[in-house]
Image 1 (tube, rainbow, N blue to C red):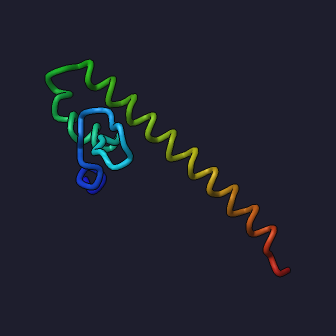
Image 2: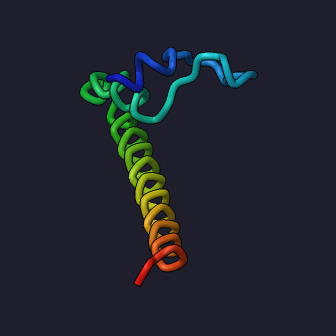
Image 3: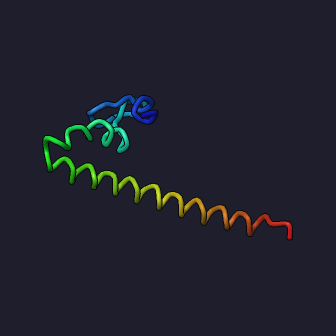
Length: 77
């Protein structure tokens, strides 16, 4: 919910860095209640969650690789 409040929860594509936007966690939080009435929403939201999970995993792996390389370069031993 913090992401929802910080990003501004806008439904239009931002034209500037300072415009409000709707990130994937906010999309999932906003439309999860409509899953009951529209079965197609469930598929779309689960795909959005999968994309979000993939982005988090990829960025985590990249961060780990960077940390390992920095530790090897600047190790004192």
